[in-house]
Length: 246
Image 1: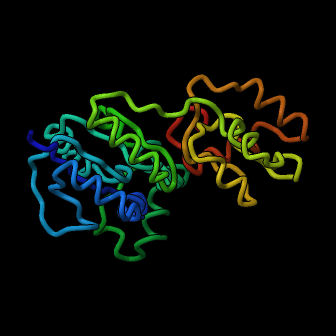
Image 2: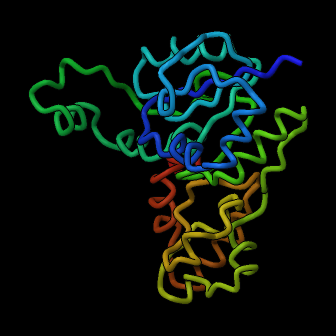
């Protein structure tokens, strides 16, 4: 039986999600045995445009990126957005809330005119995306689950409930009780509430759950003396492309 051909690509990103795949170590060997990886710049030198599944990391930040992404989409039977920059637009979207020319000069100085850029956006703003693997970085165990589902022809079971559920399962103290502002009540779970259990708060890197309970979020904010603006600004860190952060 012919093995599925898999390729990894990246756009504007830190490439940390691909590193998470490499960090699978022994499990990665099992993945490699099940498929033929034809392109993976982080891990190999070879490249081929003949592939069935494309895992794409990063957000689109240049008009020229669109043509490349559309070509990847045309070649792939399945396109998977890998990580927050690809699924949501990620931290690259922060520049969208500032004057474009000021951002260009801040980053590139007097060479700004040499560099192409435009407002950042997630992959789905340019091409159809079949599956999202959320997170910053992704959970490598979730990656394996999605990978296996693809090979078996099944739909991956991506959590569609809030991070608060996982916080309760981990018996974590609600960070609102500790004077912090958290996006957990409306953010998609699947991370094991790792940020909260390690002493921080939910940053929203997995995006909003479908049909988030906005009324519940408002009630939580009101209970702790916080306003809507306190939470909207935090959404811009990862979900600046969504209507809620505009």
